[in-house]
Length: 138
Image 1 (cartoon, rainbow, N blue to C red):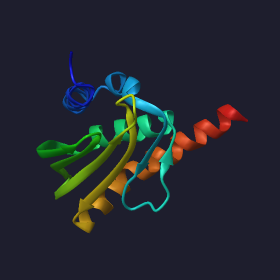
Image 2: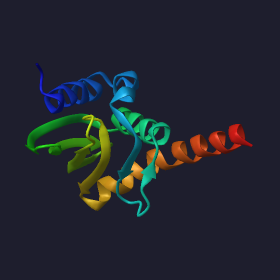
Image 3: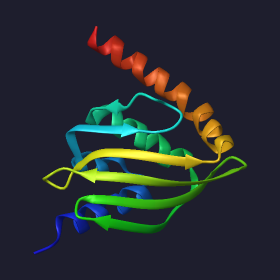
Image 4: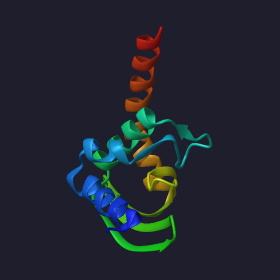
């Protein structure tokens, strides 16, 4: 019998390595949320979180997890990467729900220049995506 947290981590690392959102989709809880700099508000819901994480893994170059810690269904993953000329370092704080699905993800990153570079690339794509979503639901 496999440990569900180990299974989640194996699939999560495969999503990041393969940059394949289809791997991530079944790992998301229905009430998943993502908090990430520079935004104060959380992104909520599987569709929105999936889209944003897919953008992120396709934007950050040389993304690598360096270390990981876990305590039950709480996971911390230290990562490094690059956005253009900016090196970045961060930690993904993951909480899994009772079914070992991603319940919440809090992303901590530094330095500010890397966060700003990432935002310059992702923000216009997210704005366009949200506009398409609003049009589709209207």
